[in-house]
Amino acid sequence: MIEWSESQQSIRQMVRDFVEKEIVPGLDEIEYNGVPPYDILRKMIRTFGMDELARQNFDKQIARDRAVEAGEVSEQPQADKGGSGAGGERAAMTLIPIIELSRHAQGLVTAMGVSMGLTGGAIMSKGTIEQKERWALDLLTLDKVGAWAISEPNAGSDAFGQMKTLARRDGEGGYIINGNKTWITNGPFADTIVLICKLDEDGVAPEDRKIVSFILDSGMPGLEQSKPFKKMGIGSSPTGELFLKDVHAGPERLLGGSEAGYGRSGAKSTFMQERAGVAAMALGMVERALELSVGYANERVQFGRAIGDNQLVQLKLAKMEVARVNLQNMVFRYIETMAEGRQMTLAEASAMKLYAAQTAMEVATEAVQVHGGYGYMRESRVEQLMRDAKILQIYAGTDEMQVIAIARDLRQRAGT
Image 1: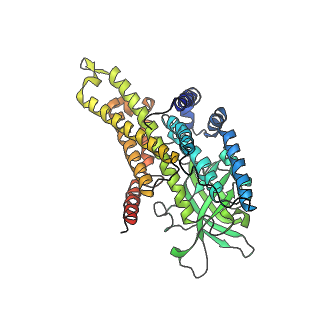
Image 2: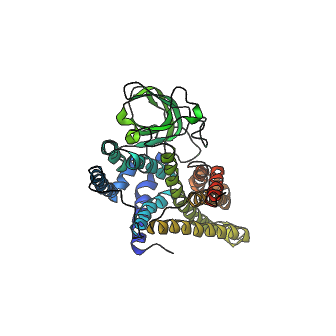
Image 3: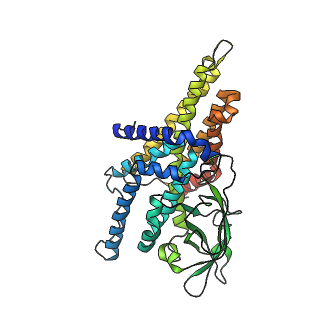
């Protein structure tokens, strides 16, 4: 794949038109003035039929699950086994809105992706049929807002090792949960929360405790959701804190229906999904930064000529274009990988995330430099791109953790 197909280009233009018409005019309200982003995201989802597609896929999955449960089907199908190409088209249709939204408001992607992709996806991947029917569909259509809660004040990169939030069996099949979570995307407004914590068992050392997950609802006694944090960037993605004091969760809320249903491996696979989308976010941001920089370099006149005539400015623009091409090729490679019916290795996904995050930050910083004093002003928009880009180097695993993951995976696959 070396370019978008005609149908993909057509869809991308329609999404771009929607974003520029429906989102950009009111961007300051959701970025800076605290207006929740969910209504405009729902409008986009419904405009492009994403909700109906989600319902159709949900019905197919539930029917398949029931067939498996009844013994009519022996196993779940392998996605696009043999390389039918359908997985690639689905991947492209998922990434196109991410790219277009990230050109103006990367936070919208984060808010939508965590709700539909991480929270809804976790339930669809590991939940029981009853849990899927009770909670998942509303998340997949964004009729309800979801949050995926793993990070804690002392448990960021070392999410499992430093985790303090605990669930203790209540002796009647349920659990009592205590602790708090922070930096939780959608936390202030979430209707449904997938909460990852440790199982508190007598005689089990903290480092050996099981990782368990629960599906919680807003308004449950003992569950408090903070107001949105004030952040450096991605203001259109509300972030907050969760406080849990003696929250009672019945056995029906244990994700997967057992204490082994969604443990460390489930959480780690969710991180993999996040990393694949970062390249698409970075591509949208780099494209926009380059467009704004080229336009300004042509228009801004100093010492009698456009600043774009200066070689140092030309070098910045050229490097931005190299970055754009590299990111686009990464996105295309991911789509082709999905079309072939295979998954990226941990090293590949982490390398893609690492490069994309660093590149977005570098390009956004240079875009501000090209714009000079104007670039430091909020109205220029390149300053927003620079602030938004920084989070790509932090969430879904910091740059430093990506390096560790890449090296570790390479060594393990080499047998070292």
